[in-house]
Picture (tube, rainbow, N blue to C red):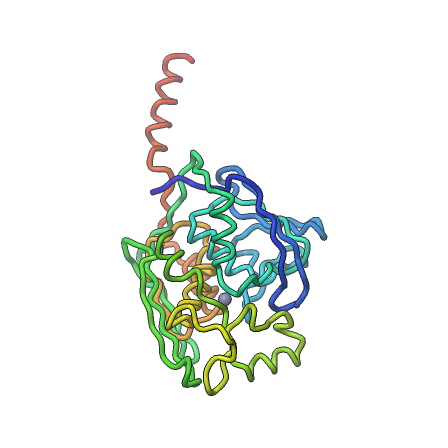
Amino acid sequence: MRKQRTIKQPIKASGIGLHTGKRVEIELNPAEENSGIVFYREDKGQTIEVKQENVVDTTLATTLGKNGIFIKTVEHLLATLFGLHIDNLFIRLWGDEVPIMDGSAAPWVYLIKTAGIIEQKAYKKEIIIKKPITIKEKGKFVALIPSKDFEIHYSIHFENAFIGKQKRGLVVNERSFIKEISKARTFGLLKDIEFLQSQNLALGGSLDNAIVVDEYGIVNEDPLRYEDEFVRHKILDAIGDLSILGYDIKGKYLAFKSGHDLNNKLIRKLIADKEAYEVVGNPYRERVVGSLVWATNEGL
Ligand SMILES: [Zn+2]
């Protein structure tokens, strides 16, 4: 079990929202231990904590919301915070969507590493998966099963011949996240993007922040960052979605053609089944309580 962490100094950034197409400013601020990841919509005066109850939409991206105020496309930033073990952060946002940056987590990793990370006193709680939780739906499958590490095994199967079948598995830690996952960009099929934009969605999507694929290959001039960048990006999304649990995870996540919607259903099914998990807190708590009892006995 590890100590909680936050950033050393505030980070300011701005960029385009993938779905709204609007420019938005964001500021990441250090926060006290046990405060968790909290968003604040500066333009609306609304706090939105990162937790399952505040997930309000999972079509195309993961959206948090509270009292009718929303923040869209939180998953790449949340995945980065989980990957870098940033547990406490107060995120001020002047708009309704987290900037998409280059479509990957790499710009967030760079900004956080540049600002610096500090360890705090409190321990990070862990959720231990005790029995398998699975969801099957329309040929898609997702599961969490017991494991001593946090592992992800992901398979995708696209009709598009260029993406095709890809699968990858890894133990998620800071090093593997940065090296293997963080640079993988969002992707979409050209025909889907044209349709979405005709529906006023993915308005900020461009070759600067997404890999666009047609039936012949990628439309972007720059090459893929990993040979199997598509499945790696799906892993990045899954890390962001699972991080909403608010704990370090001891369990293996398996997915076949999953997405934000199924990931969210999996978390809800897990939380609803008290026998499926155990949350473990500070390993030294009993010793602290013991010394307090001793102090009381001494009449202090
Ligand atoms: Zn994504």
